[in-house]
Length: 280
View 1 (cartoon, helix red, strand yellow):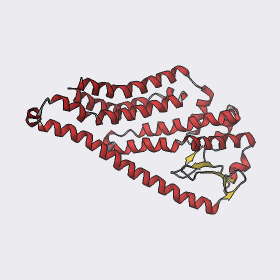
View 2 (tube, one colour; view 1 turned 120 degrees about the vertical axis):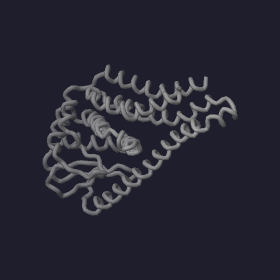
View 3 (cartoon, rainbow, N blue to C red; view 1 turned 45 degrees about the vertical axis):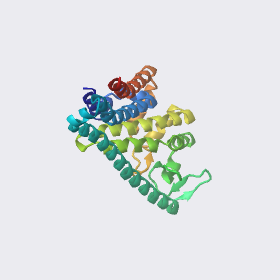
View 4 (cartoon, rainbow, N blue to C red; view 1 turned 90 degrees about the vertical axis):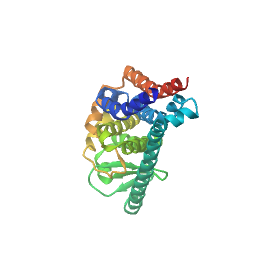
């Protein structure tokens, strides 16, 4: 019974829970806690699926039981093995694709962009654009348009936003979710969930911009670059700017943060508790 419960929990955490969380925009006011909850739910789903086979073993007390019910053992092992293979294959594909694209774009930026005294890359383009290229050899890229348009405090907010992405390695967080997203069968994927995680990452970087330049300057900077364009492999400050402006006005919410952390704890504890119960 418990292996079936674990399998059901895996489906619930991988398929049902992301859709439910994505329909709770209130958690955007606690982006750090919400991201912890998203990670815990995703990891809990993976653990639940991996624990199906170990939880099935105690059902068979000896070799005779294993010979009488070989199909059940094989099915449980296949569920866990299939998940491991899908995650590993997805991780390889996503990682290879993202790093190759960033490497190509980084080379182009280094050729065509100018280097300023702060180590930023400046593209001679009139559109106000700002983004970063994450990785070991990271870059913060600004257009001449954003330098000409934004006053000092707003420009500082934009730079602080991008540097927050690089410092906290938000790219690895997004890569983790992308790997899990693509490892799930297409019929079970929640594209809305992946979009929500990207928004939370941007909202978290906005906090760094506010600490540097204040809410007003940050909000005005978001307005200025709301229509900016940037490569898919980069992280741009203009992503979901209108929604993030509303979040700046609302401010943080401690109770929502506590709720998100509680969700994270339950999502991780449930599969572990079921595995322990199976062996008790």
